[in-house]
Amino acid sequence: MIATSRFLLWLPRPGKTPDPAWLRRWQSVAARAGLEAVEWGPLRLAVAPGPAPRPQPPAVPIAVLDAWPLRLPHLPAATGPVDVRWAERHAQMFNLLRWDGRQLTVESDAIGLKPAHVAETADGWLMASAIADILACEPALARPVDPVAIQFLFIGRGIWEDRTVHQQVRRLKAGAVYRWTPDGGLSVTRERRWQLPVPEPAMSWDDFRRQQDAQITRLMDQTLADRPEPLALSLSGGYDSRLLASEAAARGVRPLALTFGAAHTREARAAAEIARILGLPHRSLPYRRDIILGQLDRLSDWFEGCVDVSLGQAAAVEDFGLPPLRMIQGFAGDVIAGSFTARLKPGDDASLDAIARSIVGYYWPTAPDFAGVIGLPADREALEASVRADLGDDSPPVSAFIRWCWEDHLRRYTCGLLVASQSAADLLMPYYDLDYVTFWARVPMEGLRHRAWFKRWFAERHPELGQVPHPEALDQMIAQTQPARAVEWVGRQCYKVAERLLGTPRLAATLRALGRTTYIYDGPNLTSRWHQQQIFQMMEDYRPILRQQFGLELQPDYIPALTDKRGKNTQPARMLLTLAAYAGHLHRTLAPEDRTVQPAERPETARQKAEAAS
Image 1 (spheres, rainbow, N blue to C red):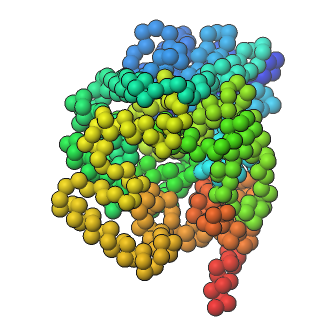
Image 2: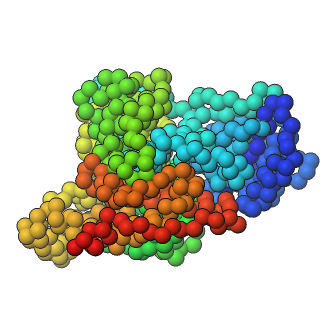
Image 3: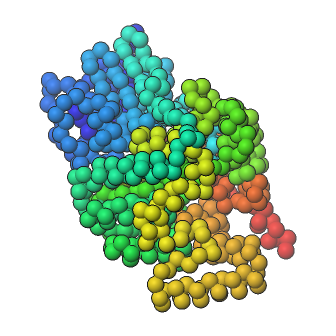
């Protein structure tokens, strides 16, 4: 087996002789990306160097495992065939390529957390970890852009399904198996896609408690089986991370608890209180002002326009100055404990069509005026049709919805966190487990709403931690000891006075403008007035590059059109920056010698016109 973190693969079309000039370009792209060619029969494969020595000719590797770079040193030696079960156990997030001399098989983790992409060309198919490697081989694949994918990006903070910004480049489908033979070409099935059960109204509280106990015990024993060191834990103050922290402490493991975000936020204060109760070392790190704007090209290289660039907040783990470590990550509570499923309204689960309309309808209020921003007409029906097609016809509505949550709603966050932290931390994610997901899919709706059963179970299993309110419970004090409670009480009184003087909306707007809101992620989410001004200034530089790379025309008076249906423009501005920064990244990396397109002279924006008029 070869273990790698990046690959580039070319599969010839049956009966097609590869063009020597094209092969030289493929070799040049692989070399420029730092990839090494591997002899693999009629295939053309190049991989990033891994921690293990390469097999020497004439040995032909049976399998290539593409995983996150800091996971590679922890992979055990394979004593037998490497299959998806082995990869799921040891790599968790992966792409597995196997060649037996007659057939190539490509499989991924069932949710698709390790990105890989595929594109069809005149001579065959390209597969790669990075979209940029595919586009470097075939620049024409960059256009046209996918209008549905771009609308998904704006409303969902990430591109759903197997789409990318580029219509001809696709992400490997979740739960798919790709097979290629020299005579038959490439085919794909969804045979590894999760099949989840329906909620069981007959499940009792006692049944739930017993099974939840067993599941959590199994997951934590499995996660900590080899006592990974050095070990950290991402502690946000919510229920999911505090559960992992308490279970680790109960097993005699004391991970370093890390909290990202401003210390004055309720999340950070709750995390500090939980760490104090458990006796865990704790460090809190506020985000640098330039955590996003200061490294746009780096983030675009990682995210390739597929997720909100502000998820680069995870790169702040490097600012702790720690050695490469393994970090337990508990992000998944939206799905496993029911808070997202509870968003289904009466009638939404009547059919798969109704589920698709409900999904798009939930996110649609965050949509800006697409035509007024980039000249792209909004098409809600196309989005609903795409979601409906992706739901499939193999599951009942609620089960299909839960699966969609994992494959699309949750993946966009998780992939961003994984990609941005890959150089500093190997993330261990116990909740991403099919048996555990299946268990939660069976929980009746009465136990899911408001996370009722999870909260009750947690309070019984960890009563002292259950006394610390969730950060979203704004009417309860977090501190459990004096004089911390007195200090918190004074702060709350000051906030209430300001709220009475300014009003809640105005106070919230003022805090956002200052970049000091009560929400822990608002720093990197570019909410301050300074950040907004920087974005609008950058967009004028990106205007000609958006046109050249994607054929999108940034409208002259686009700023008012960014306001979404909620009356806010923060998220649409971030998504526009995500798209534009990716275009700029492609402009620099795919054709570094071409500098024919220069930033245009900045036209007057609506804001400048208003200032001039005043």
